[in-house]
Length: 118
Length: 114
Image (tube, rainbow over all chains, first blue to last red; front, side, top):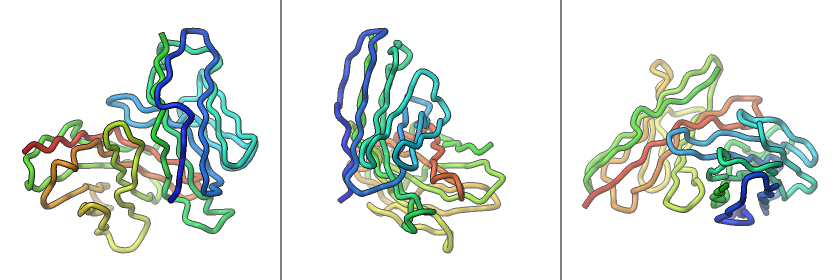
């Protein structure tokens, strides 16, 4: 079974703090994604990575950065947390069809981290 | 630009009744289509996907969906729902050559009542 794990299920941070959200997958997937989930808005892509040290901005990258030093780990960083970043954060991973030859259409999701910034 | 619209934010239904969750998309290129389900306090799980071939796709837990290219729709159906189907359902699209990035709809909350 594919396993995507996230470091925390619940997190409470203060405004201005630097926040690290960690995601680890065990299926040797090339692609990794960070989404933000808000009621009525569905999931919105923050950043994704298609290889180690490679990253691309998604639809809402402002206020976030990412790091991918190892293939299995993808970190989301809030440089200076603000209250409007209170949300559910979901990590996902998939194969990269072009390089692996395997079907990359299915994304596998972690359980999510509910972040509250006060 | 591509977009996904889920036409109902909430769908209440009685147990053993049929249900349809509606999804429309907008795209100028060929798409791949997905339905994901999110049970309370969990991540998303793939229900079914359309990549090519037959327009009627069967998924897990008795769900199916039909791809209608002319109406740009991908509605999800189940002939008889159970209490355990209570969850949030997300329709999503991706595009060839786009690193398999997904664009999600806003979600439909299905509430099954006894």
